[in-house]
Amino acid sequence: MIQGNLDRLHLGDLLQWLQLGRLNGRLTLLGRQSKRHLDFLDGNIVYVSSSVPQERLASWLANEGLLPVEQLRRLLGLSLLRRTLFTNLLIDRGGFSVDGLRGSLTRLAETITSRVLAAGQIRFVFDSEYPVAQLLGMTLKVEPNTLVLEAARRTDENGHDAPPEEFFPTEFSGEAFDSFFWDLIRNGISDGDRVDGEEIVEIQTAIRNILTVLADWLTSSPGLVPLPTSQASRVTKRLGTQEPADLEGLPHAVWNQMVLACCIRSPHLQPPETLPELAQFAAELDLWQEMFDNETWLRPSARRIDELVENAAVSWSAAATAAAPHCGVSPGAARLAAHLVTVPTDLVLWVLSTLPVSHPHLQRTLVRELPRRLGRSLAYMADFPPAIRQLFEGSLVTHLGACLHLGRDALPTSHVWPTTVPGDSDLLATMLPDGSLAEAAAAVRETIAKREPRPAAS
Image (cartoon, rainbow, N blue to C red; front, side):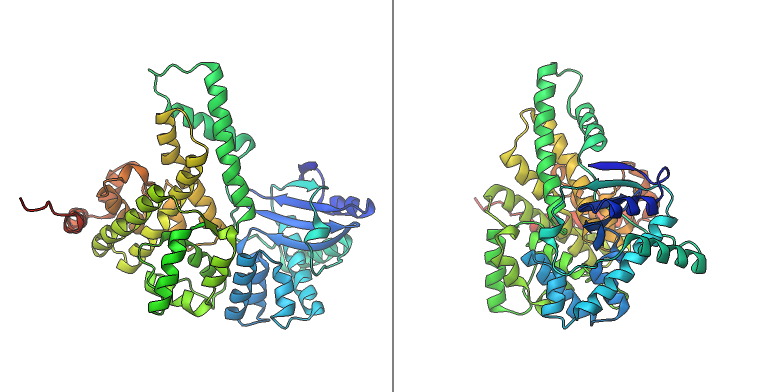
């Protein structure tokens, strides 16, 4: 493992050193909020990839107009669900020639390199153990010097090619872990609790194991989450009776179809804004069976967790829908968002069911703090619309966040679910003036009251 900063070593010198050494491995270029990868075989660049949505291969091809965006999205969906090489599907099913795809990848490599050269602070890591040879289908075989010269030419002709808005998933190791752990200890262990050094070490090991499991999932997942088998069975039944399938009460299915809907960023593709729109998209994409056939995207049902999450999705959806007109939000958008926002908590509860934390208050704090962190990473990885991503920020107050906040407060299990607005309640009054806040809260209470089971007559 070789690492350093490009403010001390020019990118061209680094690439030339890797070329002269005929090295194999992955070079990762880390910006403040981006990850870009250059894969090497025998010193040549054979593949490029990026966490920046506009620089992902499918989005790049869509913007080059080389295939219809709907066809690209279906091919990418197949690749994600089957965990197969997207480049192979492009050639086998998309009608791409090897030379044509190589040309597009080369142009993407040039763009990525020019943006790295224009960026300010870039850290690099070269992993010589990364199995490049086993992962590749089609290769580029681009000489590093040629790449840097082309990037420099672009800069001379067009000025600095500033990187677009970027993000990559939150890291769960190193300094990020230490910061999260000690925040968790401060918030989860009261002054009256007696915890000695040995217990702290045990707690730290347990938390590290939990975050390692989640980090491994983030590394291997394109934003998709494991679907409880009970939900898969219900989707199958609904597909057999109507088209498109009703997604109400199926939060994991909603999440995964939203991932497939957002997997390509293009002005010609708009993500669904409501549950019926998402259901229509899923019917047209017709990849339900692909999702059910791959055990990677299924997990055993856990009755208590599944019932908690699915019931919350339905009740939260109804409450947020009632609040929506008073919050300046589309009721359909509120229903969709209420389903999505429950999923990261489910993932944390599922991990805690197998890797429990012995300290009860600390475990409750973990359930309160970790889902937003995980949801933020997954939502950005899946390139969800900004309105959805902002729900996991914790520092922004938005109309949709306020709508969901009012719905959450009416749930009997409200303490389980992540807050969607900052802690200052005055911000809600500022966001919803002129009686709108009171009207929204009243509409939520009325809706929840209607849903509560009435006591049996004596």
